[in-house]
Image (cartoon, rainbow, N blue to C red; front, side):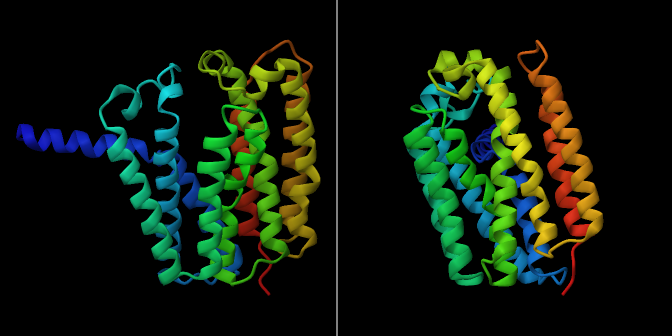
Length: 293
């Protein structure tokens, strides 16, 4: 391979890193799950393609613009100092243009091939992440975690609405589940990296309020997930198999959280990884036990 080809390959890799492909993958998975539920299992392959394309472009563009905004604090934290902007492998101007282009392309795809309401939801997700979370709240308040959860809770709603054409009670149930799940999931990770966040001046809950308050709020949100996760059953979207699975997973999640809260541990990656399993099981059981009308 020529030197020029190696340079081009390296540049492509750096731009790909800017899009946070891991997060984009999770967004696409939850969006597809929402589409399956919204279509009652009768997916339209063409609609799936354009919805995932538009949503994925928006998630990638939001990630790039978030990195542009956070380039100074990323340089101060060990786990983010290697990113393209802090290390100078991509210029700020080029990253800004790249992120804006992805956002514009996403909106065009959604408007032309999916629909106005899903396009508005995608725009809302991008706005809440880029403006509300990254620009306005992240450096000012620990509430950024809850408010920032709006963007992470919208992908399954986008998928559901794209497939069903309706913003109904089931769409709100999916939103609430994702919205309530995110803060305790993030706070456990923030406890692990609280010194990094403190060094960068980011007032996450562990930095602003301490370990004990973070543990208590984690418990409150985890307990609140219990009734919220049962809403899809009571709206008639899923059946009794989901209900039984949700009861078991919530009991386990709550027990692990209580154990963590009353322990001397200041962090628990075990709880962090279980929260991922919890969400995967619940969404998986929704698909398996979906009620087809």
